[in-house]
Image (tube, rainbow, N blue to C red; front, side, top):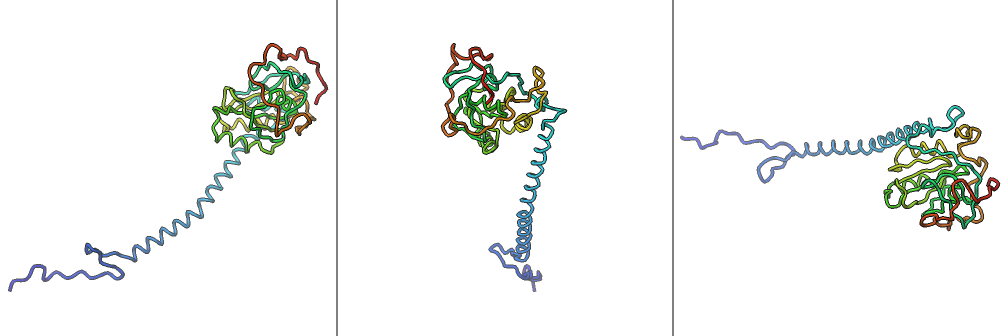
Length: 274
C-alpha cells in the first residue's frame, strides 16, 4: 500500500510558552521577556551612570578652567599677567583728567580704555546695562579697577550675550553693555588694557579678568613703574549721585566733533582722584 506523502514525518512539538502565529511560526515569550528584562536593566544603568558621567565631565571642565586662569593671578614676580595673553593691547594713560557731563573726549581707541573721562563713574557692581553707555562715564569706572565688557549687538551671538550676562551679573568691579559698531563681537577693557574676541567662550576672557580686575601690583607700566594697573586703587564701584544705573547717561552718537577734549586732556583741569 502506497504511503501518503509526509506520512512518516513527525509533527513538530509545540514549545512551552510559545504561541503559533499566522504564518505557523512560534513566538517565544520567554525569550522576549528575557530581552525586555535586559533592556530594562541597561536603561536603568544608563539613568544612573549618565548623570554621574556628566557631573564628572563638568567637574573636570571646572578644574581645567581654574587651572587655565590660576597662572594669571598677579604677583610681585608677574605684576601684569596680561602680558602673557595673546592679543592684549596695552597703553599707559595718565589719570585724573576729568571732563564735565556736556563734554566729549576724542578717544584714541574704540571702545576706549583710558584717557580723560567724566568726573562721575559708571556704576560697576556687576551691572548688566541693556543700552550703550556714555564712554566718558565708563572709562572712569576703569580708573577704579573695574573691567568693562562690551559686545557688538549686531555680530555677537545670542548665546554669547547670555553667557556674558551670567558672567557679569552681581560681580563687583565688572559691568557689561552693548557697544554698536565695535570691530569684534566681544571686547573687554580695563584701564590701559584691551582684548578683542570673536567669541565669549574664548578662555582669554577669564584670563584677562583674572589678570586685571583690581590689579594693585606696581610695575605694570614701563612708563611709570610705581603705579598699579589702574590709578585709583582705593576707589569704589558703587553708585554715585549723578549716575543712575537704572537710567544712565546714554552713549553719544556720531563723531566727537571739533570741540572734543583731546587725549592729552588739553583744556581740562586735573581734579582730585575720585
